[in-house]
Length: 480
Image 1: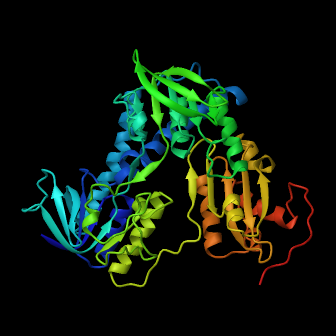
Image 2 (image 1 turned 90 degrees about the horizontal axis):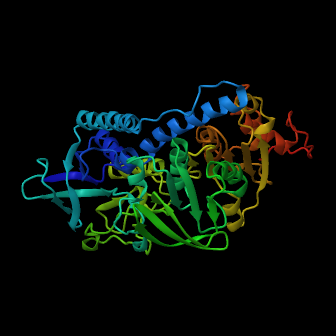
Image 3 (image 1 turned 180 degrees about the horizontal axis):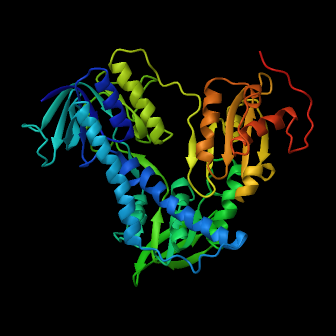
């Protein structure tokens, strides 16, 4: 069997690339080992986790109504974990079914198989699905490699117990354990902590770094860290290393090493959430000319071309950041280039969102990145305590800040912590991509009372004109 374009992997980057290429008139085949399209994001990542976080958030809001507003619904809700799991799976089924229909309408062929490279223009197809062509091979003119990533678990933690979970296992919701240890204070671990703590688990989080979310700016993490400390009732072990895991009497015994905690404790379940690794092993890439880095990524240029002229790469295997929306845009670039168009991935601001409670989002430069790059910047922040909307919602621990070039007054970065930060950051992405000056933000009328106003208000702080904050500043003129 021959197909001009084969996409190896049916995740958000893979199916986006395939659909666009089909719209451009190409004959496209997706090779995907899973029985459904969607990849990690839809099947066992972004979508199911957000569905569960939605439930946890509502439980938290009901508790706040009881404590702060005198609205009492009685005792803690009785959670049917089977019903929650069923609803989560229904969301996945609905979305994957839609993708299947879209592929069919675009005449995109889907082969359910594990694909590996025999050479630069041939894939070996393994599996027993009827969609696999006779001979178990497919040749192509171009292939887009979109195999994604998987949770990284150190061998020492892989003890063969189902009580030790990765993010996939945690999202399967086997039960609500009485006690749960989360190894890793990154965004995946903290999101799952919000889910399980909301459902009633007694959670502990351990992180080797000296604070949670070490990749985000400290001022954005502070309100979340306070909330996490409350959820864990103080069991946040930063600066601490996990030495070993052992299954003992239907629990996992964990040894800790560090100044904040030393010794051993037992937990009903352990979630290992220390990062992800790209799926490049076992794909036969050594039979092609692609170059793989020490971290397992495939090298590519701004057009997603690899060192092999027949192979393009997108998504997690193409390098950091490992984000679904980045994969989607890279997929579009690859499809357009293969279709003969002049296209390249040249994004200035790739937004990152941590869907915890409160949410954290940023785009463009973080303060740490600006310092490392030697980039001059000025920070102006607007505390949500000064926002009427935030006061009405009882979410006054939020913060919106801009990083501004002090000479041109252009916005080069934005960070937000608070409810809906993931939605609010989109305005900042547009502003940074368009090279907006701070005046462009402040001169745009934002609706009142909304949280979106805080983006405008933070800009007004820069000019010393914020109504709700008294912080006089020398008047700043518009850049050239």
